Image (cartoon, rainbow, N blue to C red; front, top):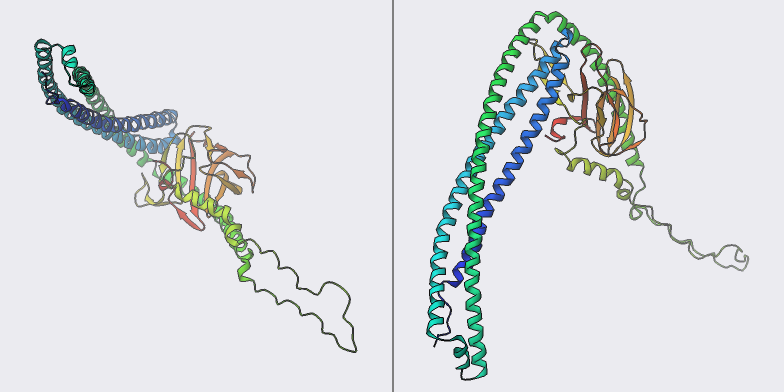
Length: 450
């Protein structure tokens, strides 16, 4: 007779299989996410480098554009250095992935050996069971129907368990094969990344040499650069005045509107109901309307509800800090926010109230958020300027060749509001972009996506 007890080690295979899947998949998912993030970053940097290279090539033969070409080359070098850092991070991640795969492969190999050993025991037990007794006689020799059913169920479960053990071994072997294949692919990818990083370092060295040569050439043309800088300062001053005037006027209007909003009904004291006229012998009650108290006036909407739309726009703009789309499809920041040293002229500081974004010729300029047109102004030297209001925030777009917007018009996020203008002398296309919170200037680089 065969005793009715669980075969030793039968639960091991299923626990081991669950553990193996957790061990094998968790590191793979983490590595895949890191790999994808780094690949996306690398692709974006390469796109930026290609865009900058086109701008450099466009101004290569224009002596007047030497300064603009130098700025573009500086950005190119920064992007190249970022690309090298990203490639190095990818190599490090690939090495980590190789190490993790090797650990998993070792565990899988060990567990396959254990499962095969347990499976061998199960097969041997099954063989002994079939040789020592007849399953049919084993069931028919039961003392009652209930025991016969339990014996039949036991034999069935025993065979199912053996098939499951064989399936667990097969799945683990497949997983091991995939891990080995992934390991080889990661090693090949690492070799390609190493070759790529060497090429980028060679190109970077050439660009640094070119930068030094250009800096010397610009040093010979210092007087012209100072003259151009003075003209730009005058144009910037006129632009700043125009922007400040429009924004301050809009802020003043919003403050007045907020003050003029009706107060909540709870704050308005209720008037006492008029008393009915008293009867006297000399006078009769006056004829006219019913002397009962008039109905209470409908309460005015609360101020919070009246300004809710504007407040929602303010909150929406705030929560998107660091996530706003760029006002142009492609380009790079050629001049940052705030005070900074001039890139080529010694002992000279320049102040930028926003950021300047070098982009493609004729590039579409887009609103970074839902809003309303607060003003459109033409400023000599900067062409058209569009100011959009987003609740308590304002965005400024300057150096537009054209725009079809008018004051008070509603705009949506990513809606085209104009086209960037191109400098007739240097051939460069640059958008000046600012962000304000009421009367305070903000750093736009902190608001748009990295």
